[in-house]
Image (cartoon, rainbow, N blue to C red; front, side, top):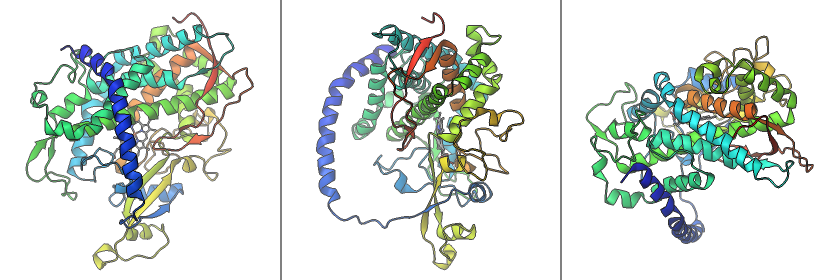
Length: 475
Ligand code: HEM
């Protein structure tokens, strides 16, 4: 069966399966409720919140060895003992999985190959938004942009993950259905493991999982990957002993991580930035001027052109400073290591003297970005601070080794491996949305609600509603 047909079939199947899943979830949650009445047997982990940028830098960068693991409690779902890059303990397996993502998929030399997929996703977003505006009853009606954005970003990410035969131009429903299929895969893991589809092993992949147009997708890289059997040799980070391919269950978990980490974080950042552009029309005008001056439409969708848009870059950084999509950074450390750095308060003895006790360090990324001792008027949205002669000239998305002023992508060994691709994707989507549409407050008197909704990702509590007017004929 052709890959495209297979994906369409999956999308069609998703609806009835969803109903079944909802029922099983309901039954499941009842069982969980019953179980939750029993007392918990686990010892609670002590939480220590640290938001001082200087201490954060000492921990994550100077003492990276001791601060390279996340607490297990942060990953409560039972994935059958498998790990994502996020959850795997620091060691050779982590290095193999992370190295595969960075070198195999996100390497600078490979990012250019993604340009056609990125262009299609951006064009799909503009077309979708245009047709929803055309369908409005009156021109003053406000549009909720998040669903459009989510569909466009997810389509792009699904194609990076599953291959370029994954259909482009998914509408919101299809994107949601495909995402549901990914979620279902997670739920169906036991069945997948009982009947592993070995036909996709050793280069005999199904067309769905292999891109035919020269774009090596994430699943291809996972099929070829071998991970060490032993993840314990942290001292040398070399795998002693043999290597093995990933199990299907492990692949499902990694695919699920790729789809999730790649989508919502980018949607969140674009939506927050647009919200500030609605509140600050003068910033939007400046941005529009930068994006359109001296460019033809197609110039926009190129990495080269994006790099020559400093004000766009500054607006994205300012948005990430104020509203980091991943708002908490967690580390599992020994109380002694923390006490040595002056955190946690309680005196501790080294682990080898029997005094070990794990502590969960929580870094609030938003608080670091709004620290009054570091930023002038920290709550103000002011992209100019990141331009030449601004107070944050030279500050980028990655936390610097000498000083941390903000850390939207984390710091130290476990910093976000998607930082470059995320900045490119946010830039592409924002540039197209500002180039083609004017964003304004709704005329029905609603203002923009900047309340944050905290979860694994930090989104706007009330999705952005704005009056969106095409700047020219964009369909
Ligand atoms: C605006 C977009 C994004 C933001 C703000 C963001 C932020 C973060 C943050 C704060 C962390 C934790 C870092 C730490 O603990 O020090 C993280 C980890 C991670 N992110 Fe992202 N991320 C974004 C996009 C992406 C993308 C596009 C991917 C691609 C798959 C990705 C994959 C990951 C992975 C795999 C980890 C775990 C890394 C490890 O433990 O070694 N992220 N991200």
